[in-house]
Image 1 (cartoon, rainbow, N blue to C red):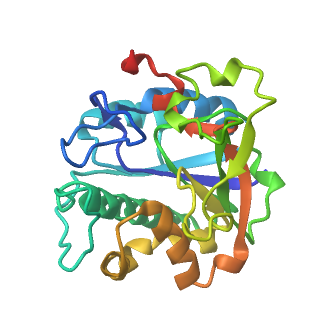
Image 2 (cartoon, rainbow, N blue to C red):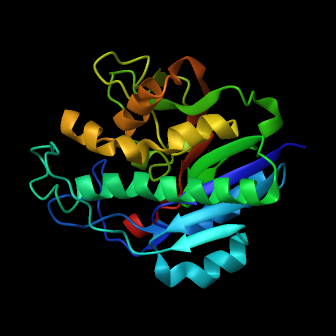
Image 3 (cartoon, rainbow, N blue to C red):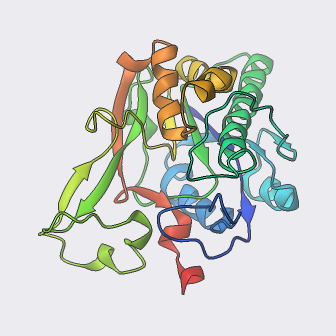
Amino acid sequence: MLRVALCLSGMALHPGKKVVGGQMWNGKTGKRTPVEWRKGLEHYQRHMFAHNDVDVFMHTPSLAAEQELRDAYKPKAAIFEPDPKFNIAGAKVDKDYPDGITSKTQITIARWYSIQKCMQLKKQYEKAQGFKYDMVMIGRFDVAWMVDVHFDQFDPNHFYASNWCVMKLPNGQGIRHEDWFLHGWDKKDNANLQHVHLGYPHTPHYQALADYWFFGGTELMDRFGDLYDNIGNFLRAGVPSNHEFALKQLRTTGLLPKLKFAFHIHDDCFLARFVYCDWRK
């Protein structure tokens, strides 16, 4: 069985407030949707840990959840620290987010900082133990996997990202991701819906990747996981977007020819906050 490292980073727990309309947070008000790691863990256990030999590494600013996370995941290594305040001099921000300096841009930088720190823990553990993981997944605490993941079915010489999907009604109107479970679309006869793929390579004007997770061989993931080292150049070149930055990093590191797609949002994996949506009622 392959040895797999799951590198979890970013926010694990946040009480949140009601924020809808396509955003997980609101740059003008500071409100954000809830983040809750426990539901994510249930899905990881059922669909990933039960079928693979997985070691967990984590980096998160969710200090209040430290002991629970350590007890639940038993990580090989973990860092719990507040998000630093980042220097964003010269960064271009979306005009729709007038407080982007303290919201969108900071959150974007913090994500890749956290990913890099977590990947460094993985690399340190590999060096100390004298081996390399066969597969490494960069993931979030709040992803709800709906299908079983068998890493031995994938080639470690490739970099995998999710198919980024939207379902469209016959009139061409797309169904928002956050409304899929809330309005019971997952239980309806959807024969008349059109399954459309977004982002690279399907949407020429939006060169971007779905970013709930990425996985591949350990050396490929190490190169991708150092995106934080390029974040200054990426921010100065355009509006901060994790989706676009992920693809930029593949191009910058020469990994784009290694890209393959696997699984689908939202049939196979989704954010737990949109699967369990009582907080919106």
